[in-house]
Amino acid sequence: MLGLRSVRTVDELTAAYRPLILQWHPDRHHGQETHAVAVERATAINDAYAFLLAALERDGLGEHAPAPAEAPLAARAASTPPARDGFPDASVLEIFVKPSNIISVGYNSATEDLFVKYVGHRIYRYRGVPATVVEALLRAPSAATFVSAHVDRHYESEMHRA
Image (spheres, one colour):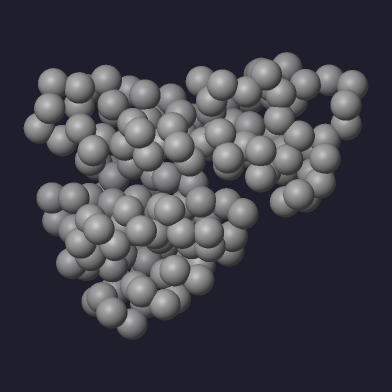
């Protein structure tokens, strides 16, 4: 799904994931006949990312550590589905932004609610965040730095526990 034959680091995984999730995010296809396909693809892309990320973490590979060369990660990870503990708004698609102290973000374009899940599974909902800010967040080199500078003190928020 991510176009990887094997993956050795979180950086490699994230580099394959980000352009695909940006291309297939349902908000980019809202109101178009491609919306249903985008929802399916984005879900599959997220599942693949979560699955491979969990395998990297299970194998004890750090954020940037190379994997052992003997077996491709995709082959070692083929039997365990990813865990799901998404956002309080079930209509929001989770987009992973690791490596960071932010695990993932999600956005509801209808309500302009941005969800940010931090390590430790604290989830913040920021209200009234324009789509342009979310697009900039997804393109930022550091999600945590971007949220701190452009979201935290600029939008009303509330904390949830996953």
